[in-house]
Image 1 (cartoon, helix red, strand yellow):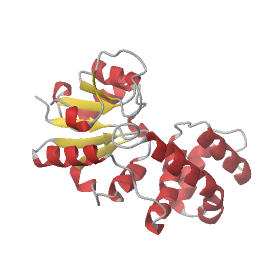
Image 2 (cartoon, rainbow, N blue to C red):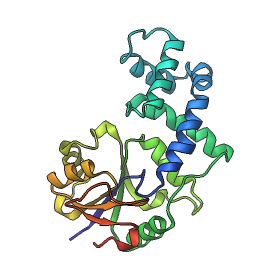
Image 3 (cartoon, rainbow, N blue to C red):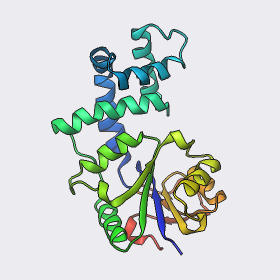
Image 4 (tube, rainbow, N blue to C red):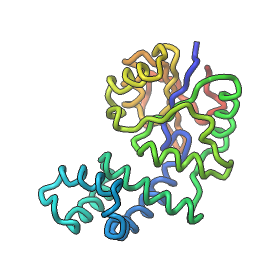
Length: 224
């Protein structure tokens, strides 16, 4: 019996184009200025120190900025970068530069599941902070009350089975009672190995390959 749903964001609840065409370019355009203006603040400074450990010239701010931009261009899942992006996106949301994109069917289905007593969680490569910002600033209003918790790469990579086992342990739920939603087959494979039920979302175009996972095009077709 499904009592809990863990959902991905990009390509699942939200369009890939929003992340790639709105959020990433916004962070790229503002990251240099943000680091120079806020690098002295404790939260930002700690993230920069974490990022500096990953490059050859950790004491040079400009080198660090260049590396951050390169990571963005390469869509690298670097945890301190993801956290910095979240801080930059917060400014954009608050300024009204954009709203968090959520598919209408995802918003409605998650609201219905929440009312039914099903617990909802998010697991995305974007930082927990960025996840909360997206769901707080949507055209459907603030949806953060729907979720019991959020997970990012601090718990592990999304293609690693151990990450899903850790999530199940942390939320104190048997894996077979958890449904994981994603558009990435490798993530679904890892969740399935951990004992989760799985469902693949194919939002745009055709599925890239056959799959062992239930496949749907919107949240209304998901079977619990």
